[in-house]
Image (cartoon, rainbow, N blue to C red; front, side):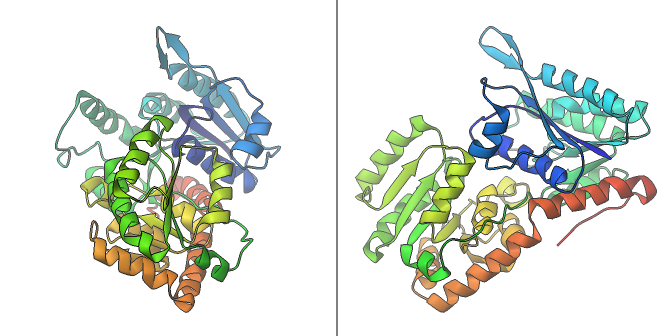
Length: 394
């Protein structure tokens, strides 16, 4: 079987989406499959060097990255060129072997449905990151929501199966599309070697937040927490967000009197982020606000990063965070400051508890690594033709 992963974003786009596509696709290659990633070209650069030095991925002979220039019209770029390229590539590959195609791009669903209809040995899968097929939970509906609703209702029944990133999401889609095979598995971890003992990490007394700086990600909450924790010699590193957001955040930190206890770093290459986490972090923070999307539809990538480094995490007690961290997490009610402070200090001031949670974190990382995800997805892709299996790993 040959694997093709399709992602419309440009190569080296800041944020987690391209990283996730690379880790998803690269994990299939690690299992021995010939794997092709079709992606926007981005700025000219050496792909092999980018894999190693930007993304921290070892190049493999069976991993092929196809960087496709996106159409430009005025100041806008369009992804249809990536989709046409992937469509033609799959038609070539299917002459050699069966092909499993994965994408999170709704714009590619039309092409995917045509491929599944035309070729018996093409299996196409859509990775869901939302719930557009039922918009009852959306308070402010936009035209794009209705377009996605139409895509899903028209085209999901015409492909081989859907991949959900939470169990709650899978349950809802099974209700909506009972005849469409489904698989539920969180996005993956990348277990990292540790160059410091758990006690050395604990003594750093540093919380690390990774990701976008949107309000519903808990940034406001953490800045207020920094004020409370500064007297306990605890600092917070914020890693992510766009560079133009940092002056505003730094000003807020200064107004709160915590500018000496926080650090802000804009989005950097994943390899640099992992290096910083290995050298600086004691704890990870996943304090998502309790919204419908955060509760049921998201797989917090930041939690996966913390697990990858075997550091304990403190997170909101909501289903999506629980599903990723399991017993490696310390949970508090969203937006409950006293509980959060108690949880942080309860770990940083207790060497035995900290060491225990570090071990749980490393164990959980192995359970949901990218390679484990690729094994589950390859099993799903191979089994659905036989019996329409629904797979929901722990």
